[in-house]
Image 1 (tube, rainbow, N blue to C red):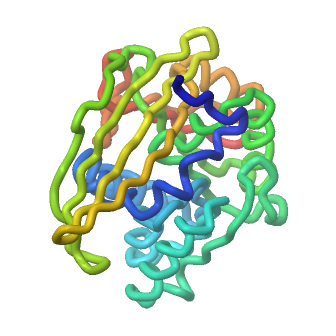
Image 2: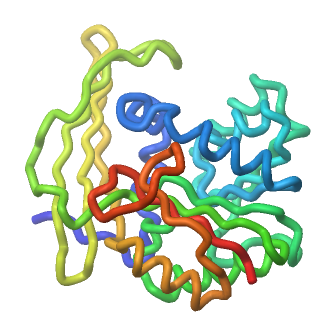
Length: 262
């Protein structure tokens, strides 16, 4: 029997950390980085990244001269981010904080911009946690500051499948290993959830090691998220459907909302 997702959406992210960059390089890659870098440079002040993970976005923003504060609750994700920031000599430019995005440990009105890339807010499975996070961002963002939110596009349309080999290939860092991802996708339409059951197998010579966990995302459309942002005190400024500022539509590959704190 498939395991039910935890109600808060925390499960799986610690286990995912060693594979996050490897899989991301095969899906999104760096396509979104120039978009966030352009917005961050235009913000003219410190930028907050929610769910900064391994520092995939925070590091290039820091290299561009942006002062970034990344917050994440996963210790293994942040450990990889600190290694990345250290290698890039960005410790004074990028600050990493372990914390809960529903109640962020920052003073009011300190950030010129906040961003939640790559479906971060959809990992909040309870409505009260999403409302608390939007309220927390509103508090720490300066009046008129920008809040950028990216959603995983059209999760309800993802077809269900079982034990499909999604990706395989070499990871050359960390001693090198051949990795295979076998994935199952389940839809819990009654609860508006999409669950990704993951099995990563690392092979080094004759040694094999597998890790199994699930990542769960809440189904939210762009109009639904926009209404929640407005309720939290934001004004919607743009709905985008790609990383080149093209307009959003329901069939767009990318779903991005830009809002301004009122």
